[in-house]
Length: 224
Image (cartoon, rainbow, N blue to C red; front, side):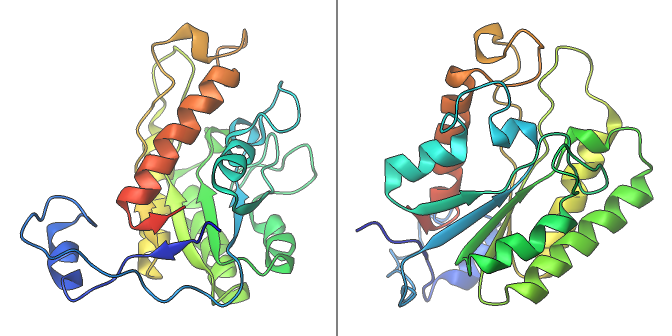
């Protein structure tokens, strides 16, 4: 049985001050895992078409891959075209997906910024991100919260809104005690990882994402 648990220990203060969990502090003692929830772990993911596996067959998105590899239940609520502000093909933005996420009673919620919010003002992106993350925390208070940085896969120069979105996710998530993970831009520079639209991952691209995200989650103390 795979369990989702976040690592805590007597060295937590050291690791937080170092800005890294389970790395960068060689002097910190190995830590026992935090008490695991009595129920099996359930993860909900909220994101856009990159997370939903746009253009691929069902089950070829990285959350589905992560679920198969770990045995952890993952409900991928990602919606093509959606963002913190943008309304997707499902007729919802990220805030509108929160009620569906709450019905899963998750132990962990992963939310990622979206390039669908490019073209909106910095203030609007920050405010909408904060509203959504606050709603997640208020509606699912027992769930741990992880925010992922915003991806920009096309070969064109990265718009400033991508970094604005990532910063907004970091600020909103960490303000509520969650964990922010910067996964970089793991798909850029390798055409084989993107479909012909130069934006959405191929199966190989999704495999790259699931590897990077799983490693970063485990570095952050989440054992899958």
